[in-house]
Image (cartoon, rainbow, N blue to C red; front, side, top):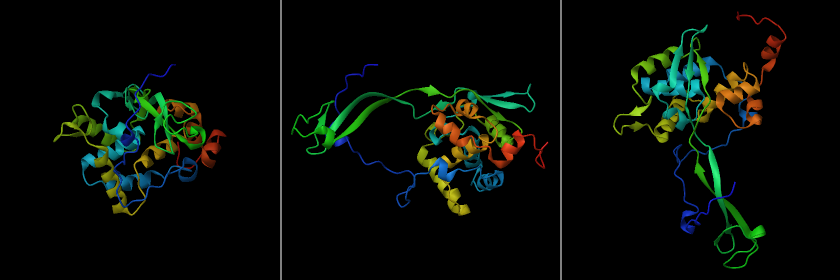
Length: 264
């Protein structure tokens, strides 16, 4: 596909400092699925986190963040119409349709910043201003446009922990599940990050926004095959699904027909 003809941005727009919504004095450590999510932490931990929420709004947000496995921005933009109860299954299920899918972008152009003089160039080997070798002294940047996409349909079992909280919250909402009545818009990511940070501080545990998504994937990975995880989360990468689709010793034992105590 041909790239659009796009005007180069102004140099002063190139590296705008971004405000952190996680906290000025908190060092951000990039987490790794391989290192940080070997297995699901367990419902005992999740129940402590939900119980530590300061009010019903935050409690519902944490539960939906976990249950849908959505990113913070995706969860904040959930609407009541996306959830339909199916009573004709055993157990009953909640079918989620058209949930928002963020972080899907398409590259429409690229340009090269000359690290010698700062000039911005379309694709070239030499800087049009100073003649510097852009292969050795250039940095590529991309211009992208966001794509409006939605997730595949997925289901939540209504015999899962927290299902009662989900159903009760859906009853209370008319449209957006997390509507800020002061602004008449969904709550901001900053609001969400502050709530998660404060729960973590209260419990004295390391808690960050993406943890709930990773925990959900780790839990589902003990039950679903990689291809099913791929569909449930609407992931594009097989490698992501395979990293989470770990059965563990008990899971492998079940597949071999071993009965695990406490399970029907």
